[in-house]
Length: 138
Image 1 (cartoon, one colour):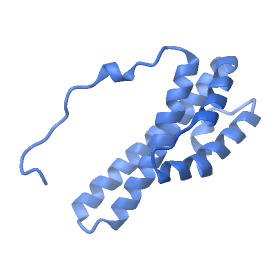
Image 2: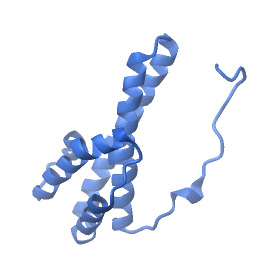
Image 3: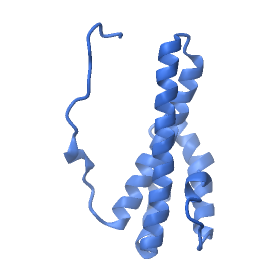
């Protein structure tokens, strides 16, 4: 709409998706990109949708916010799965993330402090989760 011409999807940058096939790599990327990044994106898009005066743009932003929220929920489910699969690999990766996390924005810093760290503390104390719980902890 703003470009004055049709725009569409481009090629998928599969090479960027690397990072290893280990449980530790899965945990690290899920925490960084999903639990933190997607959650922050969902919050930012939701806020922008509420502030946007153009109804069509506000609706598109709200749709994207819901999509980002689903991605964050999926990241928490992946984290739970990885921890159940190989806790000896997952726990050091979680600890490393917490020690080395570098938020990209003030919003990510808030999400790290107010959502991710408390959820991971609760996560670490639960040894027998019920199926589907971790998506609701975030």
